[in-house]
Image 1 (cartoon, rainbow, N blue to C red):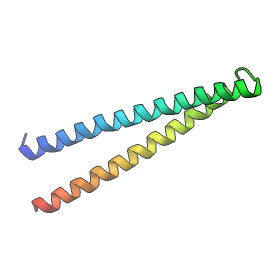
Image 2 (image 1 turned 60 degrees about the vertical axis):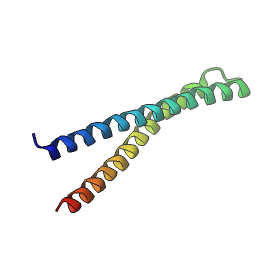
Image 3 (image 1 turned 120 degrees about the vertical axis):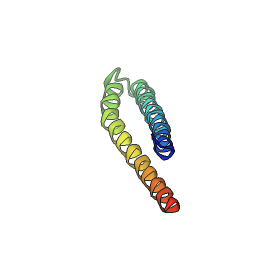
Image 4 (image 1 turned 180 degrees about the vertical axis):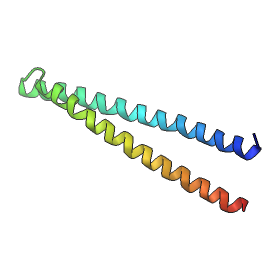
Length: 90
């Protein structure tokens, strides 16, 4: 394996670690916001599990959309960075 291949693999590994961390943190934030927001709304309107369940179920597609958006942006940044590196090495 050449040095440039090792460097590319290292960049990809680091990128995937960062991507997984970002997606995990954002998913956790969305879930916590859904739970605490739902509990607060249920307390205010005295509707025990209605808002909590509704917000949790609404949080699922929101989490998926956020994951796709973060993944797309991260891959676009990687592609841009790799194109710049290939231009400078040429």
